[in-house]
Amino acid sequence: KPAYERRFGLTNWNSGGKVPLGLKRKGLRIVVTGGAGFVGSHLVDRLIERGDSVIVVDNFFTGRKENVMHHFGNPRFELIRHDVVEPLLLEVDQIYHLACPASPVHYKFNPLHKTNVVGTLNMLGLAKRIGARFLLTSTSEVYGDPLQHPQVETYWGNVNPIGVRSCYDEGKRTAETLTMDYHRGAGVEVRIARIFNTYGPRMCIDDGRVVSNFVAQALRKEPMTVYGDGKQTRSFQYVSDLVEGLMRLMEGEHVGPFNLGNPGEFTMLELAKVVQETIDPDAKIEYRPNTEDDPHKRKPDITKAKDLLGWQPKVSLQKGLPLMVSDFRKRIFGDHKEAGS
Ligand code: NAD
Ligand code: UDP
Ligand code: UDP
Image (tube, rainbow, N blue to C red; front, top):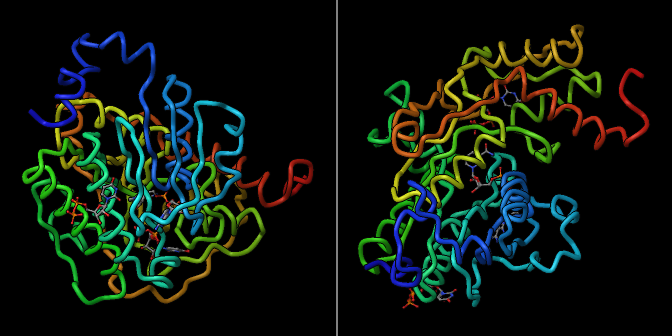
């Protein structure tokens, strides 16, 4: 039996009514690497709310203490400043491994093979030693510039191994390989999520991703920078939908990989229009040359997650964007001075 099952004597403990009461009462001990980041901090909120004890491991490369500060003083919360490239000794039940700079601005500046490869190896070594269940947050970028549309988990992808984005794409592909190696070779209980573009409150304001750029630009009355002809597409998922998917994946019985994304597909020009409708109908658009190796389109096929995890996103771009905008307004202008008011 895999270590995790040996430890708890059960499988699939949160589905089909088979919730182990002991665990539920006491809560689990959970590590979230990258837990001070955008996605990680929302995940931490849900885990703490559920009654678990959470240890955030983060080196603050792109994360911020402000994202988790509201848990300071809670005995079930702990924050460790640590780079996952270095070994780590802890005793926990589950590891959500999110640590990894996720925006092109950051990963091109500081190529992150080390975090993806050595960091993931360390967290898998940790999972193996303590019999913890391990979840990897991989990415839709493993599909590269996809030749199949929408992307199904069985598609192997179209990735340039030596391009400017490869440190991220290939890094995550290696992380997936390591995860499966530890699963097959050492019996580690693993889960793999392939996350598609996600947005929401607490996103880095200046990390260069398209939703954060457009929202910050429109709020600051600067033109929205559309790269290329703006006809490339992405599918944007609101962060609460992603967190729900990650938790269902961790607690379900399937290894994956699972696409977690919102199938609603938008061109960058359509996205700019939604931002105009949400923030400022007069917001201007400015065209810029596109970046190298930019995927032309991306849209998840989420049939597998629907069937096996009973999961699908609930929040549309039109509903989710205003929630992110009010957070950005506060962070850009402070609580009292709002744009245009
Ligand atoms: P983020 O940059 O906000 O969070 C990443 C966190 O990891 C940060 O807090 C950062 O400080 C930390 N970190 C980075 N390197 C580290 C290291 N070596 N040791 C310890 N901590 C380290 O990004 P995010 O959007 O929250 O992404 C979280 C995860 O989800 C990442 O693995 C990312 O690849 C994946 N993902 C995100 C998206 C998205 O659209 N947000 C899409 C696909 C995949
Ligand atoms: N590791 C860790 N914490 C642990 C156990 C292992 O950080 O509790 C690291 C360890 O330093 C090693 C990696 O995980 O670099 C892989 O560990 P594993 O035991 O699989 O490999 P080995 O150490 O035998 O090469
Ligand atoms: N993009 C854009 N303007 C910006 C930032 C990005 O038009 O200010 C485009 C970018 O060229 C890409 C898409 O938006 O086609 C998504 O980029 P992002 O970096 O957000 O995500 P990823 O490329 O990793 O999916």
